Amino acid sequence: MAFPQTRMRRLRRSDSMRALVRETTLEPGDLIHPIFICPGQGVRKPIGSMPGVFNLSVDEAVRDAEEAASLGIGGLLLFGLPESKDEQGSGAWDENGIVQQGLRALKQSAAAKNLVLIADVCLCEYTSHGHCGILDETSDGWTVKNDPTLDLLARTAASLALAGADIVAPSDMMDGRVAAIRTALDAAHSEDTPILSYASKFASAFYGPFREAADSAPQFGDRRSYQMDGGNLREAMREIDLDLEEGADMILMKPAMPYLDVIRAARQRVDVPIGAYQVSGEYSMLQAAFEKGWLDRDRATLESLLGIRRAGADFIVTYFAKDAARLLA
Ligand SMILES: [Zn+2]
Image (cartoon, helix red, strand yellow):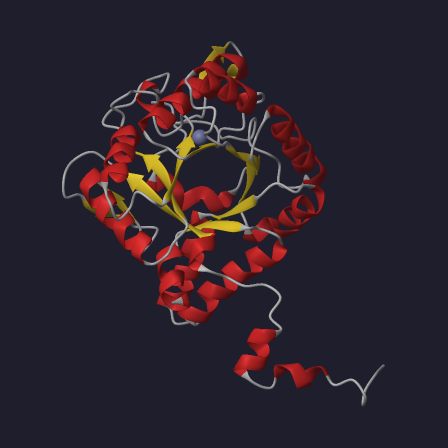
């Protein structure tokens, strides 16, 4: 039936009417708050390219997590800035590594321990060269070696689970890492620890500000031989299928806004929980527009997140987690 029998505006007449028919909602519990843990005490170092984001020492990270918990946020995604780096990235699986220390401290906090603690699993924050795996230098350049990297990622995941991670989240994009991590977790009696795989992670300019936050910029070259090409949706579906076959319990899509169609396609293809990462560049460009007064901060923040949920993500990793949770309270 068309106009005048049908009038779409009937259901838009009031706040309560609009709330009743809203198809997609956003809750603080859908949001994951990333934390960058650094050495020291009482450290709260601002990231220049990401206003409102900090490198936090373990004690400050616990305070930050307690605030996130009080806002009803779903969980934390933990990254580490180690004291020192080496060729292999041994700080990643060190029993006293920076994230391992952070996990133990968070689990001792009565206020924060019920947050879902997700530990990023990668080597790039820990390697001196800043790549996500072991380097092989040959006469015609260098490559990141896939298979030897798997052992190190598996050790890292087992170590993080032992330290208290509720979920491990491999972000390296090596082939076969999910199966290698599953085997290592099971062998370490962490058979109940789920794997959230960054199944489809595109090589993206939008990661720029993160590299300052995590001090993980490659010292040379780029990551296009392991992260995905921005033109490829079908390849993303193959990556997801393979990670699920290898034992991933959930998948994470990254970045979000420039790849909403990929999130939608994943949602239609698989039934496992899907997370999306609203990455640093998405956050920083909105912050820049807010500073200039070009966009309404509160409305644009929530709209950017709602769009990602509508595309099909169950949960969102976002640097806006605390701001958005306050707006939704
Ligand atoms: Zn990495």
